[in-house]
Length: 144
Image (cartoon, rainbow, N blue to C red):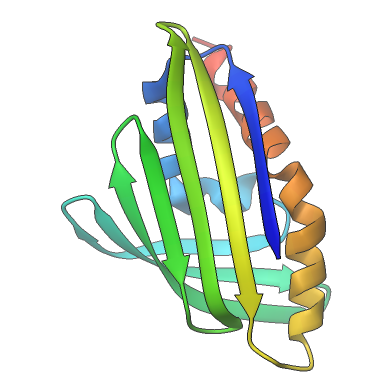
């Protein structure tokens, strides 16, 4: 599975980067995310344990996030249900107060009876990924 999308947000890239880098908050606003916990932090590299749920099926996996402050976040995983997972975020300033955010997701699932449910969740949820972050940004940043 491959998915990419891009949008412009009326916030500085630093704020948008910080929002996406706050992985432990994903369960608060991303459908299907039940848990995201940082297990280890080493400079700009995070080891994250995540749990997704698709119907009654629960999937746990570990991912690595490489943070490039204000410009990119690169997430990889190859355990749990994933043979190979890559999520690349790119943050490009349009002006001082606007940021172009681009996400590209590449996913290869391991064979498994329940993995089809997760693939459906991620496939359907991909188109909601940027809108979910956009709603979250409006909620958090419009109050300031």
